[in-house]
Image (cartoon, rainbow, N blue to C red; front, side, top):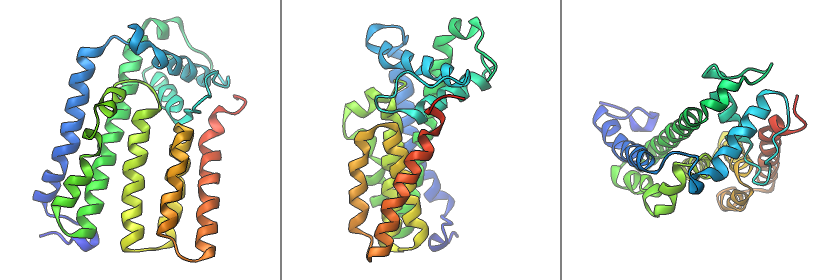
Amino acid sequence: MGDPANGVLPGRDWALLLVLPLLFLAAELTLRAHALPYWLWFNLDPSYLYLLDGMQMLEGVAPGNVNHPGTPVQCIVAAVVWLSGFGSPSGIPDTAFAAAELLLRRAGTVMLVLDTGGLLILGWVVRRRFGRLTPAWLAQTTPFLTMLTLKHGIEIEPEPMLLLGVALLAAAMVEQATRPRPAMIIALGVVIGFGAACKITFAPLGLAPLLLIEGWRPRVGFVVAPALSFAVFLLPAIGGA
């Protein structure tokens, strides 16, 4: 038997908490299989822009597309290019451009796996704190509430990482609501900074945790934490190497 209070759930509960995250992953992979290649005009923008930005970062050049700003996505692409053997900090070979579709698919898979993990964490936290599976399942239905989430999930763009940010933010807010502590204030700040670095429109969600934080000192700490987190996540894109 597990001890939910200590984060140890029964094996049956873990299996049930995996159902919706894995269904999300399967739905995205199925949709992607029918929607690719990325060079088709409705997939081209911004996926290929993020591929080029990731390659630029590997070469020590600041990415050209910083409108969102999208830095975490660019970092994921850069890491995929490097780990796939198509680039290094010393340069990008021509073979990387010939393998563009492969690299984009791998980067997309990494982001989808991260989303799947975020949904599992959200379900675990809700199950742990509320003691029931039903609210955990309801929380995990987040990506199924609109087809736009699934549509954007197959692209190389900030939106898949916004889903991860929402899942982690919700999990941290549940923790703060049920067991407030300084560590959760820091966690909330890190998540807000991460989401805003993916796409600045995520930033207004930073107001929601203020409803759960009491006292002016913790609130000041929370205001500072996202700013520092945002700055850290932007560092890879500032000025290049």
